[in-house]
Amino acid sequence: MDRDEYLERLGATAETPEDLFEHVEERSTAGRTHHVLTAARHGVERGTVIVEETEAIVRGYPSIPRILVLGPGVPSFFEDGETVVIEEKLDGFNVRIAAVDGEPLAFTRSGYVCPYTTGRARDCLPLEEFFATHPEKTLCAELVGPETPYSTHDYEGIDTHEFLVFDVRDRETGTPLAVDGRRRLCEEYGFTQPRLFGRAAPADAVGPTRAAIEELDAAGREGVVLKSADGERLVKYTTETQHHEELAYAFSLPFDHGRDFVFSRIVRDAFQAAESDADDDRLEERAHDLGESILRPMVSAIRAVEAGETIGERHTVRGDPETIGALLDHLHDQSLTVDLESDRRVDGERVVEFVKVAESSRDRIRYYLGGGTRDE
Image (tube, rainbow, N blue to C red; front, side, top):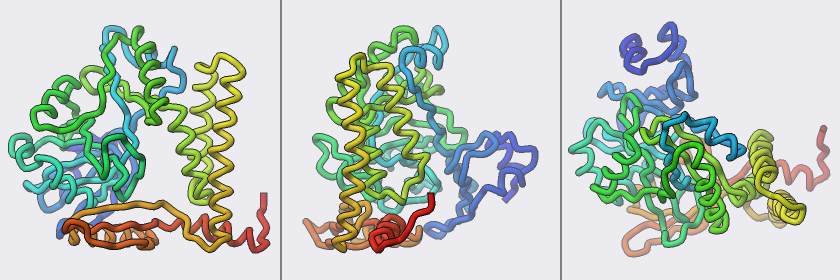
């Protein structure tokens, strides 16, 4: 592999190839060697993949900054004269689907090829047709629904899972299609997309964004992504419901998530409350909900461990037996402890219910329940 060539193709700001490639991890998937950037470095996104055998580059997806206060945040982030497009942000599993040597593969944010997501994408989306015409493109999609191995958020009308394409980018450079062009292209191929709430100038986008957030919050959904019309500039803003759901998730597995995870959600909620909750009664209601999202899940976890139950993330997946087997192998390869609770056949598909065991939380709770002490 010519590292100087890849440094140039990636447009990296590193002075030498070694400065970048010391952060690259070699992996093997489906008989191919992948070189994966494990963290964003030198202007190259985390999860960027170089496939050695084909010399293909699959660019990582950029990290999206977050606005904490809508009023000044939206007009400050976007420039005068830009059009701001408001789209729904979905609570699911972020994947990039790209054709490598003609074979569609689904890459996770961290650059792994997920066999389950790859198989389901091939089953659910017209990938062969799309990549025959657009081999240089990457579909950036959210896998949502109650039956995925990575998320469990329910969406009305989705019984198992669904892919929603929220971006289409150049596979190597990461350059996005303009929003309107992407939406037309996705409509052409029948790709489901996130809901569009509207377009406005930066100074006029705060009101529609706030209205969208109120609607999404009432429906228990995640939030919005605001995009410049050319797709280059992105910023996100999430609902109170999402903040509290993520805190409840973290405290249901209290020793598996760091303090930064928890504190960031509280900070988001505090700034949102300071801007939007005008009276003390509404603030008291929010504070009550916040407290419940912290205490109740943690108490439930403690009681579950005390009763000898397994705690962790519960998932249901379905697909052909080979794909499900490959998924379970993939999870084990990532050193996850997986407990199978149900394994059956339904209409020719293998349906598996399993728990990704939260070993750190389970073991720490057991220790404290047994009289262990905590240094603080």
